Length: 81
Image (cartoon, rainbow, N blue to C red; front, top):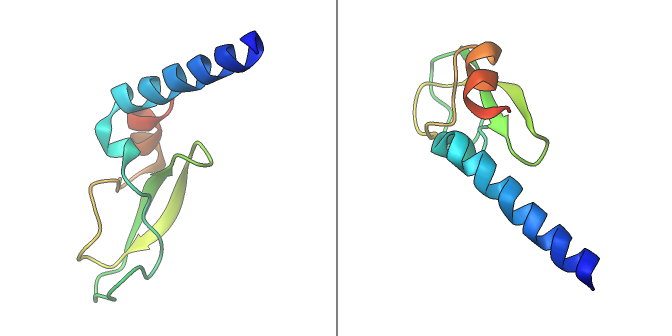
């Protein structure tokens, strides 16, 4: 029982740590062709919190959210420990 409580507290601190790093990193990660297709073709990176990594996708130029970075390095600097 103590181990379970410890693991729950540890998970809570890990979540707070990621959220405190940059609020943008907590937004849903972007995917190729999500929602509407626009005419731009901008290679970009988005932080996927489930995999704890920055993933490449093609940004079409409209919609989306702020979880979008032009380089993997920018994404990792903002979102990874």
